[in-house]
Image (cartoon, rainbow, N blue to C red):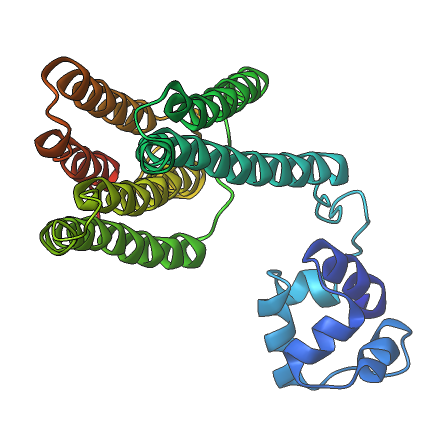
Amino acid sequence: MTHFEHNLPILRRRAGYTQESLAEALGVSRQAVSKWESGQSLPEAATLLTLADLLSCSLDQLMREALSEADFPPPHAPDAAAEEARYALFVAYDQHMDRFSALMAAGVFLSIASLAALLAGYLKWGSTGLIVLPFFLYIAAAVFLFVWSGIAHSDFCKAHPKVPPFYNTEAITAFRKLFRAGIAAAVAAILVAVALLIGLSVLWQFLPNGNGDTAACTVFFLIVAAAVGVMVYLGIQHSKYHGSGAAQEDGGSGEYEPDGPSDRRCSLIMLAATVIFLSAGLIFNAWHPAWVVFPVGGLLCGIVDTPGRK
């Protein structure tokens, strides 16, 4: 006497197969599996051996023993609520880090571009008090973005102190390629800005109004602002991917606190560069040679944000 038609569905469900997926694995039709389970037919001997391997059971369990569902419960389905909560956290984390990257990069851009606005105001209004108006407007907008995004990031970190790994190896690898290209392009843009500054300064010194240096510095600061903004954006994006994916890939715990030190270091570097530049200009009237602190600061930001791993 055989218990095949009774045991097969029990063992099939325990192994996580449907009739269709089991038929696919065996290379037979779903109707054939249905007939086996209804007792209308039996598989060939070779198919029985393959079936026992697929279901991780013995031929005796498949054919002779009277099994019960209690002895072979089906595998537990993943907790739908937990999966939904994990996906919701992923969406929140991804959107938050994208927004945080963009706001911080915009704040850094406005901070450096404020110097270009100051110089542009000088070109338009001369040495009147109006030249500080666009400067303070840019600074006010930058401070607003820093405070807003900083508080939002702090709140997110407090609400989610540990972030599980979300991104797969392909996504991390693709971003690392973008990161390398973006950092290299930003550094190259700063070097091009230095070359333009030197070239335009030489060219525009022959202009009748004598404002060639000021105009050249305005263009320079706009390019540097954009380049450093890109560096900051990519640096924070790197912390997003590193925190969720590379920690697991590098053998870490797979969890990460989404608040990296490199972002703070870059902000401090550019803040120090701004203070040095303004101090040299206002105290010693050395606006022209002091500009060099910004490309140096940008290069340092690129260095501290570059991942020290493969």
